[in-house]
Image 1 (cartoon, rainbow, N blue to C red):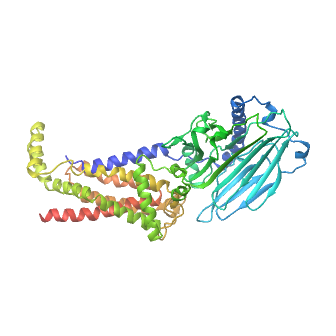
Image 2: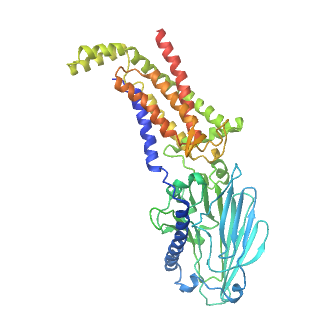
Length: 530
């Protein structure tokens, strides 16, 4: 019984179903519930951070007085009004506040003119120190903001945000004693819970948000941080990311920090990243300096920093193939200027690369198709003698020089390539709002031609399904009606499965089917002439 096409399609389906089961977007909640939960989550964030700061105090060089963790404003600070500072470039818009010397919003500007706030409402503000305290703004330029706060003439903190025109910036925190014998407070930097994204990615955002650390020991590797106690000196940098965006913090000297925490209220909430400074009570002046990146996870751009930030781009299990495919895709884009055509050309190149395997597979299928009448005759003659039937069929395969599994195994060898491309095209930031032709305006989203109520009509998956149906019809070698019916159902399953997938991924699969059909046509034509 011929199972080549069924096995390949079923195996591919299992791969896709496993991915869909584990990364299936969750139902989006109504807006009023999101707003209500935003307030609740902000309260929860404060509670969680207070709890973590107590943990920080216990692990610091001295047990600080509880009042130092939330210092009250001095008389000078009370007279200072809360003020928001907006810094904007072509790439981003940052909204800072002198209350806590914090970041209230950080908008990344995208290709289509939209702006994505990477600070979720329930997380704002982030990177705050003593959130209840109002700092004095001692310096303000187009790219540099200096905040200063003094506590009872005992100690002083100065925070300097030095922002670039791009996505990599600098932050310096200076802590100094104003008189001898005072205790210095703990210094923590937190981001979260979670990291912002656009509306179409919000449903799955919590499930794909990660706290990461890039190890200092060589060979350096990316690790997912899941606990509250992680020595900071073991990592070159730490980050919080989601599918398309990244907030990474790179200390100038990791020895100036002692702990990295991943804080979660529960399994259903996004994590908070906290980086704790190593405060030395014996020093009168201390500086904690770091670089921080807030922006898109563009593989080609992150690679320019030579710090391993590009490792945050997920290429899946077959990552080495994904990175290779990405490099080739970017090179082709440099020639075409269009990612849609680049995907098509890349798919054709891959098909040429695996052509020997493809030819072997289709020749095996063609050979099986030729012996189908003989197999049917044997099944009729020995229908009451299964053992004899099996022996005769094996003899038939040997005399006709056909392998019933010869069409399946070469196709299975192509699955790593397919899976690598699947993950690459799913996670490539470069495809966001990248158009192809006509109605395909965003290769990272489904190609909605029009809407019927709330249901979108996506044309590419339909064309892909039709192509798969024709391909199944060409490769069908079985005479069993049930198996034929099953093979014709598979294109429908794939069409439904790919319906909401990024159009770039559907375009790859469609091109792959078309090229495969062309190769099949010539192989089958040649076999009929033999």
